[in-house]
Image 1: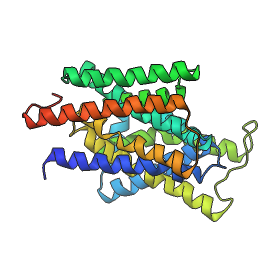
Image 2: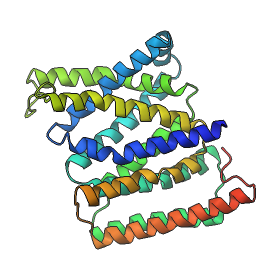
Image 3: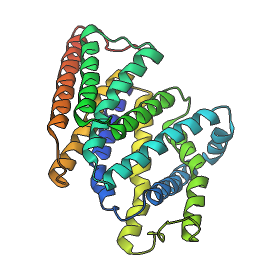
Image 4: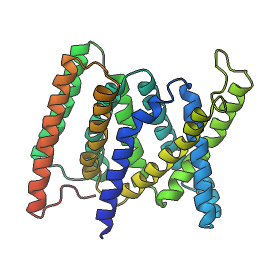
Length: 301
């Protein structure tokens, strides 16, 4: 199996896990967002420490967070943490339709960043698809009377995260472990303050209140760490434009969760925007397949 193929299947696994994750975080609806965010950070770190300890690579982790790439790792950690926080809040607040739209927009951001930063080639038909997706966002903004800030925040932070990960010369496990290691002190401080009742208007810690919630908070580390490792693995083997195309599996599953599982309302403007984006996906996919059959790669990056 080629390295590109391994990256392809890794990205499929990532998108499936993230696409069904609203079901998981909906079960944590009574837990404050920042507590969920703190726990998924800390338990992810625990998992990474076990993995790296088993591999006898803990020294590499220390060198990563104190070496020349520490600033870039910190920036990646900031982007993914912001993405996590917005997503968890969106699920708990009943805005999974908005979050799914954000991850539909993300490939647009990924394509543009791939073209601008990595000089990946974009044909005329692909450019038309990108323009259609942009028009869909403008249409939704006009129809609802407000910009879809949840969607735009999720798309932008994920796009920038992918760019940073692509340029980091670290292996997938090590790079993601370094990110959560830098976030862990902040997460621990937050939980200590919340547990001590120092934070104004903060409820008591949900962790330990019952076995089910405690298990879900611990397990959040697993469903956080493993997809991030796979995403980092794929980002170094698959072009940004291809990753953007594959990523549509994630919001499709999220949209189905929103409508079928949670029964969220979908307005006429949402359906118009989604129809335009789905049409853009079809155009982009058809053009990509034609280029592949001619032996011309979609992107050069």
